[in-house]
Length: 556
Image (spheres, rainbow, N blue to C red):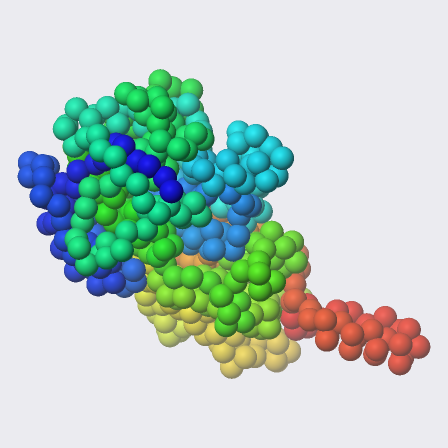
């Protein structure tokens, strides 16, 4: 049992917001009702479990703020939290490419990507004790493990907030005082069944009975932020953690101020969350913000769950999926691409190692990697690695150019609507068109014929390499390291890559005289255990003669 004393009234105007939430997200049933209080506060917002999303912020001075959940540090990060963060990073990278100015300078309408860790609550204290650590040391260890994994996965966040940060506690105290002054916090005693693992009271019929006031303090939980006007209690972990989205906007070292944080970019444009915490983001959070007179976020997107080989993952089943192990075995690009390509964002998705290897080999090693490598090999052999034509002149009258530009436009629309899986499919279509073109034109044969045929072959190589340049830009939100490797092999610098804008995916970037780098594999084919055993057996049969591992490459 656990007791709560401080309660927050649910604003009646949440009913209006609730209808908008429910319209965009039919499964968000908790938003069907509202309590009767505080009619003067108003708010708006939209919630999405799947489907389209609203337009980006219209004002040039309004930053695009998106967030992952603040992950609970009772245990190290798992694949579910990695999936959310990979998706958020891809969206942030895409949005930044729309807002990047000349030479990479961000325009005023910048992107702020927030992630972090939720570090208070009874479960944290219990987990720390089980590990033989005090709560603060435990939080430091687990929070750092998130940062390390995000680095391994090429996650380029702008703000990492910890709810044990002093600036966060200051914002929580100021927010609490503002809500208290509004008259929406009152004292009451309530006892109910308490779920330590999910940090919420289990209230039967919560959905059917409509919205109710909820407790925002705990009398029996010591590891938390003390209630400003009653230090014998701590603030409810969700009331505390949700405010991390605001406190994160403050710069490190500056004086903590709720108003200052709000002015730095609130409201958030998009909260990305797992569907299991939709209630807290779509009901509790708007109620809190309305009470404090602060705008609510524009959109909440609740994505699905991950399974493994068709089964729910769990330690008891022995089928957990450790993201760090996946990165160590296959690399960040492979992990990012598979989960964003294979899991339709908003729906549940399944992982199987066989499917993982097949998809990654087919798409990244073969469709993209093989195409670039054999084209550069032909260029080196026949043109001394130097482009003979501008890409615009080379593609004159060639339908591939228009097809590629149309697919880039399609991918842009899909990225904007969070259709990440569809965007990956569209970009692979570009790769497939490039492979089809080079196979049909057979430049290796044309070079042998000489004369006009050789000139045409030289143009064909420029066309394929321009196609690869465009793929590198358009797929960079999904596979940033792979895109960098492609771009540098095309003769560009890393600084030029970092300064790319989405509009640079327009046809015409390669110029005559540009020198390509030495061709080398940009993505090695993943060998299965069966293939490795077959290779070992073949070597033994041939008296130990060495046989090279397949890298998914074709000789030029």
